[in-house]
Length: 356
Ligand code: IPM
Ligand code: MN
Image (cartoon, rainbow, N blue to C red; front, side, top):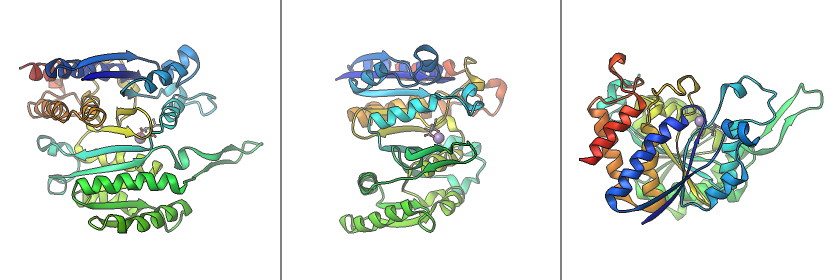
């Protein structure tokens, strides 16, 4: 098969973790006889610096003309600490999601047995955790208009907006995921307070008869935040709106022991994007210490979701798991920090494993 991939390393640790994910992707393609074509483009703070736009048209064109996008990370402290900045790196990521129509962000949450002790949560609570969080990605308060400031600057407003079409398509996808898994779906909202949540709940209830085999439960987001930590095993497929999903999946990463382990797939109308859920970790940029596994696992999701190459994806996952079992891990996961491997050394280990 021919794989045309757009590579968007982005900011901070993005280029370092991407390098490892690309090495793995190349090797897998060689091993399975696929032709890999990669083209790299600018996104984020680096794109602002070079061309004044965090998601340049040339980058968008490349994404549109590729079969899949591998994305590193976005964000720079220079902008975080400057609320008056007119252009922000995050706008690049949001523009990319919107322009590619990536309305569904799929974030699997699993635990590796060999890392159970890395989670701050008790072992019996997390052993066997395996759920998928589906986050709506192109609507809600991230994009709602109006957004801004009053004339005197003393009032600020964001709007949370959802249309029936936006809610239906993400719920449809979530029901289908539930059908493929254990047929349990949790719809997370704040229907006791928010009008948008009541629309979500109404539509979900309307759709229930279409999927009679799926058991649906409805949970307020504050309760969900607690249940994820207390009883994570009770979840199978969880679906929620954009900002709730952003927050709950960071929380969920604690279950697996490190944010550096969780991959994601963003799918929708045009080319799908595969990216780790973590950010650009600027403190670690250039130090070769960041965990590349979330990005490597995102590449695994790319093989599966964008190309239906299941064996390829499974082999990458197996290699990552083997590296963790062998203790070939970066400092976020190392028992003894002095024995932690560098980003590239973890990449070397995984490459060697795959070359056997
Ligand atoms: C994520 C990130 C982004 C988001 C930021 C960088 C805009 O936190 O992908 O979860 O909030 O969606
Ligand atoms: Mn986030």
